[in-house]
Length: 156
Image 1 (tube, rainbow, N blue to C red):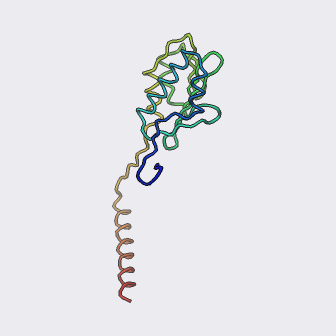
Image 2 (cartoon, helix red, strand yellow):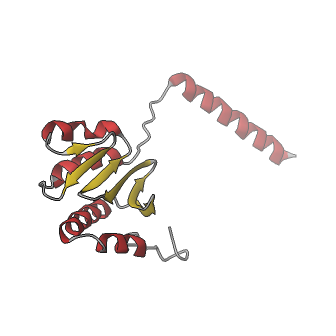
Image 3 (cartoon, rainbow, N blue to C red):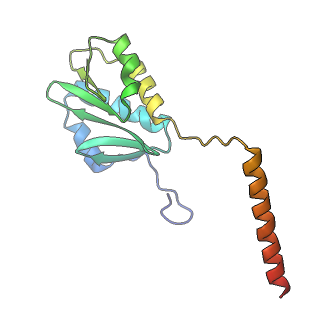
């Protein structure tokens, strides 16, 4: 994204809404949310940061994560429920929802394990193209016909 054709818009600047949201938290939550946010921005340069459903949300392709401050805990919402399976095994004392992890203020904050789960959700989508002989020959014949049509048109 560019401001003008030559000036890129920095994506690391925190929006005022997100800044207010994080600033309004208690010190332990502010520290945890800022560490998550900083890690997300540094690790995923193409991530889009926005406020959705009154929560800071980070989106890469169609995958997303959000975090919210609740009454007694921080909730980290992931777009895929299967990404929490490892965390559930390693940290049974933490509270889990269907697609969220709830970390109480009094609990330790397993940042490395959370980062691993987030990394599995936000990994960039790569398109793997496996060549197929039939499809490849069809593509070549279509290209050849298109080239012949253009050549015939130019001669006229």
